[in-house]
Length: 464
Image (cartoon, rainbow, N blue to C red):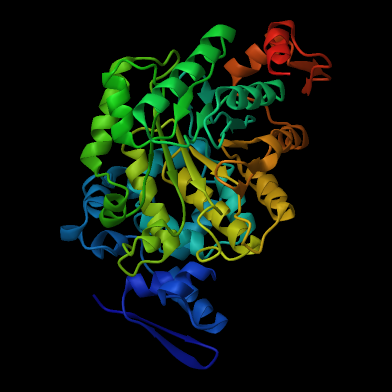
């Protein structure tokens, strides 16, 4: 198809195709520079954004950035596109779509109905011409609600994944972190462990331990051990108490193959999880993690910019009706997101695009120790995402994961966001917190109880 030209600053800019235009229009980030596809100057970036604003949304249905014949993710996107849902905005350009999203006609109801009609490339395109406040304003209109043993994503609520990782999977260390997190009101999104080993025997012991804690204390939450989907299938076949099925995913077939998965393997895992019927208030049970740069790191990006590749991963996710989707935004390192500014922008883009596509988005607000970022940057992203209506964030002792060796958000950070923004946990979990005395009502707001609840004192004495 024809390329694009734009006159700006007395210069004629030429972009050969939609893939190049999208890459050049992306806000600056180190990954696109590494790939050699980023704009060479702010002037070129601005020209690309101006040209992108004039592109009809329909063009994204006519020009695939990753070839249809060579990529099953592209085939999923095109074949599952809902033209009836797309109809209300089918006449718009990227720029006028931005105006529509910011206007009064874009409501929680209309955006929910629109989601099946949008492709990831449309969502990525409009995000590239939006300011930070635009990304926040539109995202907070959208609610994607899911349920397993509790209900996540409701307006006025923000959940947390309690992440009690331990470098040797030691039961006592994990239990101490779980208890610490629960006593700070964390864990309603799930209690999820990144295992130190992928041994099925070790994974089984972790699953049984987490299930024992949940059952013993009657906690309305779900557990997950973040092992490969094929290991989860094997665990289910052995009769182990598995709640959520986990897998890291990406936005191209080749990138997913580097993870050892395909859409058919994910479907097998989804069906295996459903067969257990362990949910009590719903059966959303897939947990996916993503991150900008994963396709590029596998040399599987097809020349597509990293943010658009990330949005394509959300098409994979929504196909399996997930309970949670987590962009681990700063984990992949400064080669892809160099500093706090790039991490903040990427986290807001991911959240916006995911929710626009109907995906229940959370964010691991994080960075590695060799990135040009610090906890002040994470506080800014945490606050912005809280305002934007994030479904869940991470809760980790001291914000320092001692197994994965990266910096993220702590139990205290979740308390800050809930208190500052008037947010509550999932309703079923909130009721449990009140019943146990962990949290109490104080002037209509949840506050930490002053004493350790009696039910937890034996466990605390055993650990201490």
